[in-house]
View 1: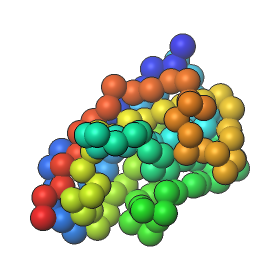
View 2 (view 1 turned 30 degrees about the horizontal axis):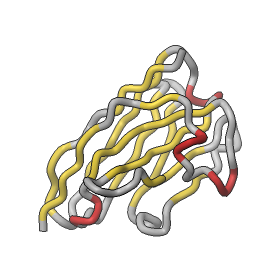
View 3 (view 1 turned 135 degrees about the horizontal axis):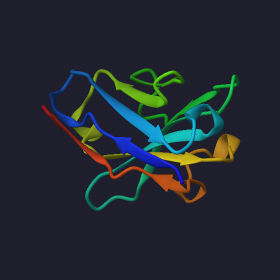
Length: 127
């Protein structure tokens, strides 16, 4: 059983940065495909970024965050990170870490593919 602890949320000013760690237990993150999702009130959950398992470590990003967000993995700490730079108010949402033993290529953004989820961490960006 995989358990994910996604933390690091908080408040930031527009243009600021936050880093969200997702610490995994029960499984090693380099054997899983890991994703970050977010959900704003009234919106569907959307894929933000994903990273492939193993030495492949291919990364994927939503167009809305490309060039601003970076997903990375620290195998020694069994943790995946979402570095968020140049934040804007549209980034305000609940952010969730997710994991799947399978990877889905260009369909990485579909939440239905992920089996394990963190409890979520709130990010609020003010203008």
